[in-house]
Every structure is written in C-alpha cells, then in structure tokens.
Image 1 (cartoon, helix red, strand yellow):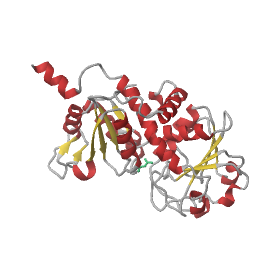
Image 2: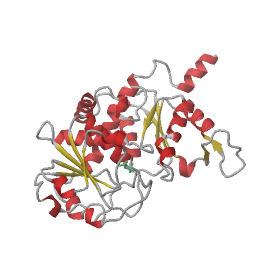
Image 3: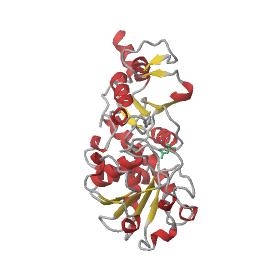
Image 4: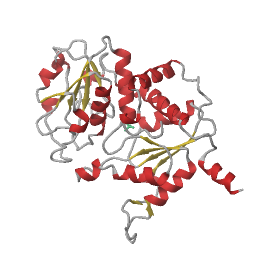
Length: 329
Ligand code: CP
C-alpha cells in the first residue's frame, strides 16, 4: 500500500480487518517492521485519539515519530498557487510539504474542511497539494471528506462483536451545537458498504450525505423505523451537504434508551469526542451497550495494520534524507 486516504487504497477490506485483529492479539510481534523509519504526524486541526493512537501504533512497529500541530506551532500556510505572499501567510505549502517529506518516510496529515464552499472541500485541495509536494507516502489522519483510520477501527469493533455474518448497521444523524464535517459519516458509509454489511442511514430532510459514499445503503428520514432490529447504531452529527456547511438543531434526534425499544441487542457507537446529552444520552454512553471506548482503543490496531502495509510498500532504501546524503557522497 502506498497512500492511505480512502477505502479504495485497500485491496481487501476483510483481510485488513483480520490483520488488525491479529495485531491486537499480539501487538509486539513486529517491533522491527519500522526500524530506522520515521513517521511524521502533522495536524492542521485538533486531535486526541488520532494523534496518540497513531503515535502508539508507530512505536509498536519500531518507528520514530515526529508530531506537530501545524495550526499552532507552524508558520501560517499559504495554499494558493501563484499567490503573492505579502499578507499574513508566511510559508507556502509547496516548501513546507517538500521539507517535511525530507524528514519522514511516511507522512500523516489531518486537514478539516472549511465548510464554506462544497466544491473546494470535496476537491480535497489541501490534501492533494500536500501529497503532490511532499513526494512521500501519505496517511490520512482525517481529510475534508473522509476519515478512513476511524472507519477501519469501527469495522474492527463491529467485526469483534457481530453475532451474524451480515449485521444490521444503522448510522443515525445526531443534533449538535455547531457545524461539523461530513468526513466520519461519509467514510463510515464507504467502509461498511465495502465490507458488504447491511447499512441504513437515518437523517432529517436536507441532511443528505454525498451520494458517492452511500450508494447501496437504505436511506430514510424515519429514525424509529431505521432503528428497528439494529445490531449496531452509529451516532454522528454532520452538517448539511446540500445547504453546504449549515447546521440543524433538532433535539428530538438525540439517541436515548427509549428509542431502542425495537433493538434490544443494539450496541452503540460514536467516534468521539461526543457532546453528552446533546448528540447521545449519557445513559446510553454509560451503559454496557456502549462500544465507544473500545472503538478508540481499536484506533491503535487500525493504524498499526495500515502502517505495517505502508512500510512493506516502501522502497528498500534508507529514509529520504539519508538517501539524498548517500547519493551526494
Ligand atoms: N475520532 C477522532 O478522530 O478523534 P480525535 O479528533 O480526537 O482524533
């Protein structure tokens, strides 16, 4: 595997999930896989789980890790080609990405959407530019439209609890106080459908997700109907795709124990962070139905499985900077 930015970078989703579960059972079995290799983790937006789980995964594989909050600790980045940089932006992404590529064998990047212009966000222009200029394999730590490491961890969690080959998985929209990206929901749909599970998506009218990721799912505005006989219920807010970036406030969509009257065995999932008693009731979060902590734990093994494949795909040379130095001698 060269890059990891979408489910389409994965040849066999089931095999990747199986490998992650095997790594969870024996996390110290590949301590030399990343020896003398450096992973860079660069964040343009905040993170708790993604940063620490990916760092831990890399360390379990013997990699060195460089991590940086680009938004707080780096120079203000100019993204536009041809810009005359006489304003507040200090460094162009062309130089910044190229330099980071010299320090790292694999680069992880997080870059959220701006939620102003759908075409710009869905073009993934920050990610595409970074990927082009760093000339290094890139691991998505969440892009404007997708969060594949989260979805792989979600699939590992579902696979670990499923009692039937094709469980009923429900993705239900949740209220929130601010506009959030569609990335987790798009990506969850993409991965669940790639794993050939039965997916139902419930959301209020106007909150449709991008059809590129949901083809094959049952889509309804009736949450009660959607939840009937569910095996897994994934709760997530996202802002509108049609009225782009707009939020919607309807507390009646918050998932509570009473809404699961027709799904007595349903397990509850959320990617975290979660707004308690806004998106999801505290009663459910604190119940033994909740898988949210296990999902977060599985982020380590999702990242390990992906990094291991990316390491296997690296050319058999020393890291980028050492390679240049050796060539110059
Ligand atoms: N779920 C998730 O990506 O969490 P963080 O934003 O804390 O990384």
